[in-house]
Image 1: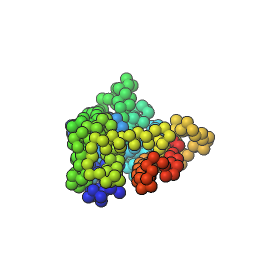
Image 2: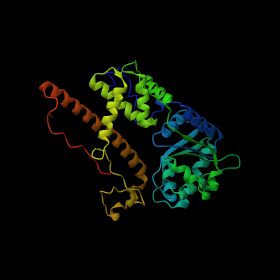
Image 3: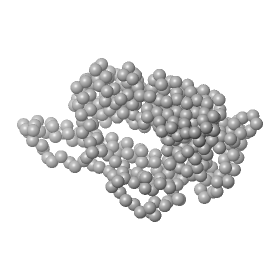
Image 4: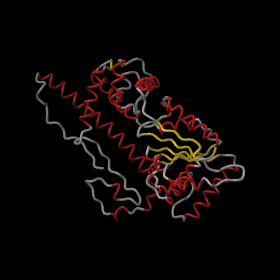
Length: 365
C-alpha cells in the first residue's frame, strides 16, 4: 500500500525470509562463516541456534543461494514433533523419494541407494533441518545414524540444524555424547545492538530503493531498538507499521513521537481481547498438546495417518496465512481509526465516536 507512495520498489520489512535482504551483522557474519566452513568440510553437523526471529532461516537461505546446485543436492525440512520413523519418512519425501506406507528397513535401504547414486554423480547431499528444537532426542539420534552412511573415501550426508535455544539444552544432555562428537561447528545468534538496529533498518530500506522518504531521526532509531529488543523479526513488524502510519498520516519524518504512537497502537492491539490467533494443526502423535484451552476435539478425529506426509506443507501454509491475514487486519484497523478521527473532525466533534467500534476479529488457536 505504501510502497508506491514512498517510491519503494519492494516492501522493505516483509516477514517472509528473503536472502536479498540479508543483513550481515557481526553475529550473522560469524554464523555464515561457520556455515560456509561446514559446507566446505562436507561432513558432520553444524548447529545454529537463536531466539525466535533472530534470522536463522534467512541466514540459511542466504547460504543456499550461494550453493552450486550442480554439485549439491539440498533439501530443507521444517520439523514438527516427529518421532524417528516419521522423521525418516519426511526426509525421504524431501529428497523426492517414495515414503508412504513403507517400512523403516525399506526407507533406509532406498535412502542409502539415493546417497550412493548422488556420490557416483559427484554430487553432495545436504539436509537442512529447521525448527530442530521440536525433535525428540530419539529423532536427533536418528539423524546421527543417517550420518553413518559413507564410503571409504567420503561421507554421503551432511546436516545443518537450526533451532531455538532449547535445542542447545537437548544436545547438552549426557545421552547426546555421540551426536556432539559429530558437530564440527556451532553458533548462537543474538539480538542486534542499538547501532546494528540502525544499520539494519537503513540496509533494508536501501535494498527496497529508499530515497530518504520518509526520513528517520536519530532518536527514532533508539526508540525502535527499545521497543523491539533488537530482534530482526520484531523490527520488521514494527517498521512496517511505522511506514504504514506515515503513509496514512502523510508524515515525511519518523520521529521519536511517531515511534511512541505506533508502539502504543501495537500495544493496544496485541492486548488479550485483540490478539490474533490461528488454529493449530494437530501434530501426529500429540493431539492434546496442539489444542487451545478453548477447543476440544475428540482424539479419534485426529487420527489422520494418511496426511502425515503433508504435515510440513500444512505448517508452512498456516504460517503464511497467519502472517498475511494478520497484516491485512491490522492495516484495516489503522485505516478505520484514521477515518473515524478525520470524520469526527469534519463534523466538529472530535470526542464523539462516529459509530460503535467494531468488535476485534479473533481466531482461536
